[in-house]
Length: 312
Image (cartoon, rainbow, N blue to C red; front, side, top):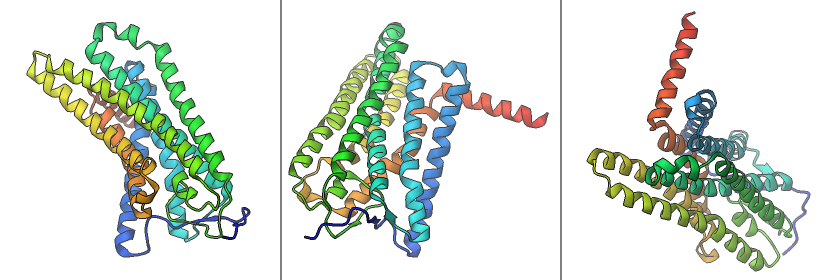
């Protein structure tokens, strides 16, 4: 096939068509994205302003909120402009930046969720040793490690993907640039890259999810030994909600990145990608944070202060 001119742009075909049903879904998606931004920004603000939340657990939550906000900003604004204006082009450099930021944030969140599961394990199973086992030094190392590993994966995959020669077909059947989708347009043999990408996925997805499952298995064992049925019920409800969000995020990512090439479908990829780029970020502040009594207390305090300032 004829090699595609790399000075041209890619065309993102998008997630929605211009029909009434798709317009309704588009508006719903914008509402969800806006709710995600507000919820995560509120979490960041509360953790920053309330001294009672200046603890490793909430610092980890603040980083999760920051990653989710940046993830939504990486995907939704471009998708919205493309749908409203009909201009669906994206440059090679713009595509590279989307791949880099998406994988940095997505990969970083994988390891951050593993760090948060360890934090919950220590808090529930070893509460008296929490200050030692979950020190500020360890917390900062976990956060920096999450960002670094995500950025390393994003840089490697973005650079490798954009080094391929692309064929004359330059339409991307997706609503943003994602490495597996872009690789399909390459003229060259991509088998080595796909093998390396598969190894990266094992490290970035299966290792964190294994650590999370181990942590929550130990937490579940500790919960079953609790004498108070009310405490057991509360702890089990919290852990099950955490695991449901983790399952959605990791399940969608594993489905997209670790499925054999012959089983891939563009429509399936778009729908599944929407789960961990748009829907999961709106669930995180609700499940991890706003159900927490200390966070709700900080929110009430903030609202009371705002109300008092309004009456002055």
